[in-house]
Image 1 (cartoon, rainbow, N blue to C red):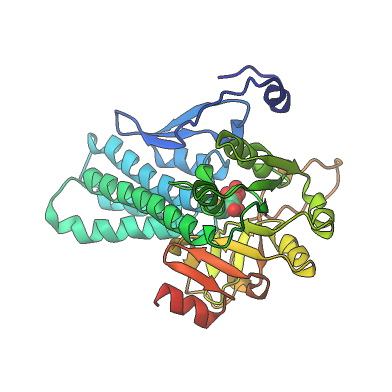
Image 2: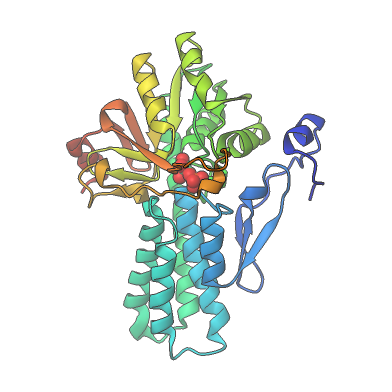
Length: 357
Ligand code: MRU
């Protein structure tokens, strides 16, 4: 752990630990150990979680964040909590599991991966109930499978997306859709890592991402760790860089994608896509199939999380409107890189075709 001086100063002094900490892991006792992302990049501290309420708090506080990682963490949290209470009583598992999984799925409303992961665990429990196996064992296996699968999906997204990255590209991204947001190398940043791996020289403009600075704190941190030249900008700088011809492409992650290809992602993504369109710069989204919600026809139906006014520095007495996400219409998205292929010019038909649904 590094001392308490401002993290920007620590960075400049080079005293922020140069290491790749585990974002999430099991402990020897079957609990979940989470890197507390609210403390990055200044401090590398961990939370140990073995109860559902603790996991809900960690998700809501953004100690663990990013759509795919929330899904992985929720699944692991259910397994850890089931393991802890197993010694107390197995008989009331069904009632406990029902309440715990419902509460966990509701921790944050926009990222569909959370509900998706909880539904998978529920389906597994239902299927395995007659087997007589220990429930915590079943939960842990399925949680591990969700995690492993997410890592594989990130790798595949990276391969697909890297094909669109020109040699020497300058790429802009928003929020954090990297190792800190998934069970693998990331989605949007996975594309950048895969391009680097393929021998392409890339450099990145990371938007600050107000109000919680996932771009300047998290994306810049992990890109620098990976040796990718990174420049942090205030969100409002994007337009002038585009007008100056400095940006070759944009790639962002997603929290939920509707059946027609409309994309919910971190607040500020939509105006970024509008700017990209105005400057004829390709705007790409990278996301696993677990981020698609085929039950919603368009993005207008995606629930948008409203967060506390306390996250926004404002004069006392001012009302604060603090949505965490916005929706970018499919017509502004050039392509969506998924683990099962690239959806060019997203539309209901194009999404169905690539996803095979
Ligand atoms: O509020 P956050 O930090 O969880 O928001 C995260 C994002 O908006 C990411 O871009 C998205 O979840 C994709 S992460 C691979």
